[in-house]
Image (tube, helix red, strand yellow):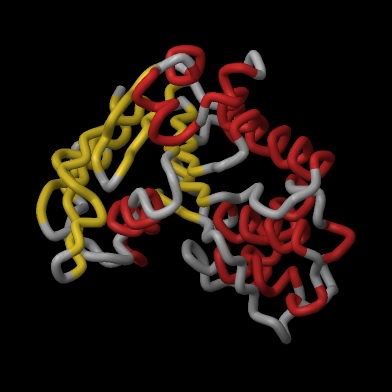
Length: 243
């Protein structure tokens, strides 16, 4: 079943066309990767899907419902959650209270929201930091907090925007494992990532955009050998390295 379908999605900022007639679809239960050079329009596409930016034109269809014009909080209530490149926790609130915000989407009961937050913190290996203030977290912990806050809303579709950026190799491996476990729980994942080894190993399918337009779509091995993609993004070194 197609969980999400994006039809000719376009977003203009004045004379700049950040996303240009983008078409893509995500099957329920899959992991879809979105790659492209810096400034290609990846995060803008996420923002339009998640309701943070109004689309200039085109459609976003989720579970057969047109959600193109919904606000971000209504999109979240539909079952779509997202993380951000720059994690900005509430600095003077504990990790637990930061995550409880997501739990309050479905319940105003403090005990239920806390129970959900604790469950999610255990899942992302952050339970031991539950009483630490947001401003005191390391980069790696902030990334996991972003994941936890999104998961606390009980999404069916999770949009991950460079959740591994700035992490050391062991930390990247930990996040890869968490993403696989998220997907195994039945949550569909749509991720933007510049760490090629990560996105190639995680994704069932990859979409490549350049200057806002889709230039390729296929399985990881197809994308890695696509000449147009290599010229636009991956570089000859990636292929020569045997990836």
